[in-house]
Image 1 (cartoon, rainbow, N blue to C red):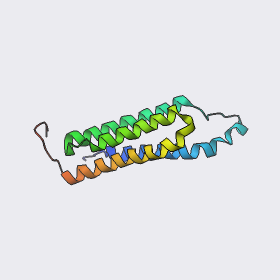
Image 2: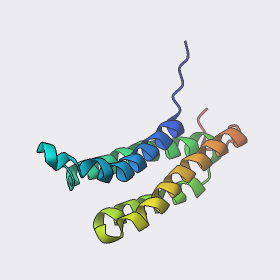
Image 3: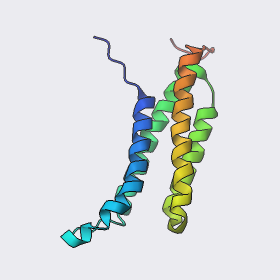
Image 4: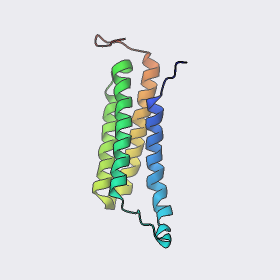
Length: 130
């Protein structure tokens, strides 16, 4: 059985999970101190989620660029999204202004990469090894 893994779908899912985490966590977390749990400003978890999303997304976009479409557009959009995502961590007072465009750009980069991989159907260059 030939099983192919869709890295773009995983990247989109990780980005959406991150967005849900960032949107829902403040709603749920406000009641946790009543139960003796305090995870509001867990910097380690935030950076872990950013690193995980970056690793999955970077691999997905690299694979699409190298094997299929050879376009830097998804990589540039993805990079801008991660700059905004990191800015959200640095400037907490503006985090909601950075979060929405960051997630939109990251998901858009994966969507463009996914579509470009399907449309170009292996647009080969001299450096392709397949």
